Image (cartoon, rainbow, N blue to C red; front, side):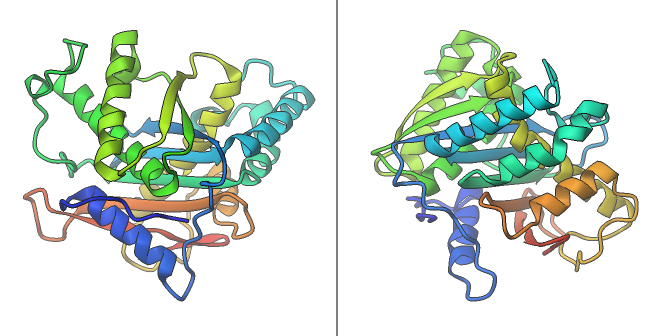
Length: 315
């Protein structure tokens, strides 16, 4: 279950927390958040994308599950890799045109959907330049060890860490340990940057929880055990980004009725959206979009939860 964050100030995390609390309590189609606090160890996998030219949103996608559920997933994903002769192939959204990846995808998704856990994806409109405050000034962070942080990379670090703290803060407590798995990324390119990442996460958790869990950090770095877990949030972020792009090309606004899928949605996206919107999955899903508030150009934003019905997303 979602536990309301210990936030006293206003801002994006406070708005997101309020939406999560309301979603859990609403009488019709309540958002189901799994109970992960009964497990000693949790695994958090994450993926970030949307910096490429033409992208309207930056996506921050997270998957939180128990160590026990991960162990069952690990057995199945090894079996699938052997059965479909995947060898060193990585299951990335951008690489699904490969024949073997396409063949294994439905089975891979079925295994991912069996995870007892929560998928959280936050898509931030590029027009919302600073969702966590004003422009980042690296000189205002004297405790960071890495001395060559660029403002854009540090802004990315703040976003990733704040959203990770949102997920962990709402779903765990101090009796647990969280292993965070992330893909190789500019925010963790060196050992010193990884130390800064850990330090920043500890600070972020302390601002949303009275008693945070302990945690450790792992980079995929070609390790297929970690790569495959991190590929789940990658696939989710990829299909949601394509969905939004196609809706925009058809002139459909996010806050309108999205009952019909986009006409030009790719076959891989149709398969993934049908899986992602399936109400029978053990893996629970929570998706938020951050856009500029209508008629405002001063940084004020609105946050929209995407409700999912099988075969068709709706807001």
